[in-house]
Length: 175
Image 1: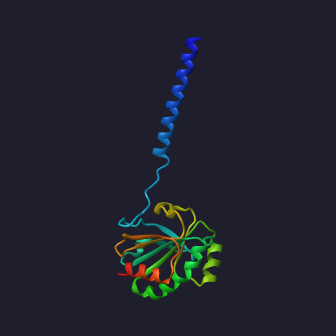
Image 2: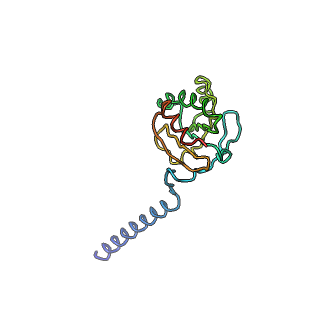
Image 3: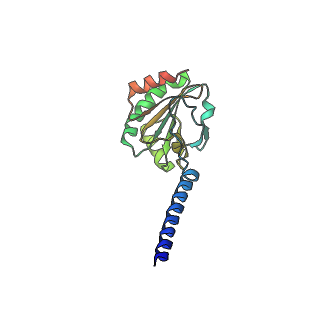
């Protein structure tokens, strides 16, 4: 009887150790979460498709300030800030400041309809697989990254923006 109890106890201990090792291995190998991108970091490069089907690469904008905005049509604060971003884009586009608006995982048709309704003329990129949003560690929407002409993240802003804030942020990244 005691031999049987010892065997059961040893088996339980071995199972617990095996589970702990398996969990550790899984977290180390398969669950490789990156730190969110923050001010001072080099902005991770990416290539996404725009609404016209063109490939857009972040590195193509070296030498320009980049106002990188993550958003979705389902996000009320995102919808409210788009007219302000458009108005400031109209003023700053000739001053080497570009807006790249990255829509997260929505159908192209939905995004096209939204852009047309809002008369948006800045580049809208489609992150269908959520690769870029995950790379940047974006949590809540809207999220905006200010990227210097040298490709460094100057600041990260979450929440709805208005004309004054957008203008001030564009001034920060203007070459």
